[in-house]
Image 1: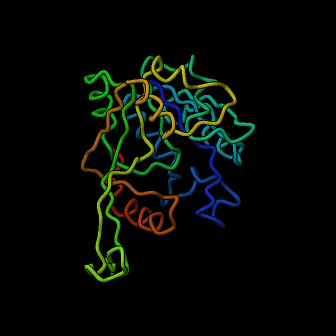
Image 2: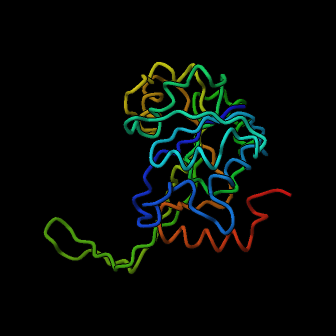
Length: 237
């Protein structure tokens, strides 16, 4: 199984931390999040990885090298201009397998990738999306009114649960190929909707797992504590 990692973002939400190094190299204790991701992919059966890089890419190349330190073969594709979260796949599509993994370079989760691959193949999906149930808390009391602005109800600090994309996918090459053009910007949500419009099956895969969006300062702080105190959640011995 092959994987492509989107590691070209600037990590603007984590400034000033990401002014001098790329977001995939932000540390979790003694290990950059990208190293953790590479080791997890290796454990899931991945043997070849392509890193789509842009911002401060020389630092990522210097750290990852050819991948031999992680038991992987690593190649690189450089975006001259930002191509979105799906666009960089176009230039390397012929180097990927019939089904392949796509992931964000800052992914922090213990999601079972092997199980996701199994379900993807079992359902013969064009694409599979790893999803997480995220609770959103509203810090204000919500006032409900009718069309004449008369009070109809009041909810004190409600919370809502939604499924969100984790930035982890398994894709079928033949299904996505018609929508990918070298040098053309495309984001993953656009690609998923294009597949749906084509009548292709896009499967969402939900597991009970840990997931944090380390691009958010609050989540990044929580991630550091969680990894240092529960390293075994993310890496097998």
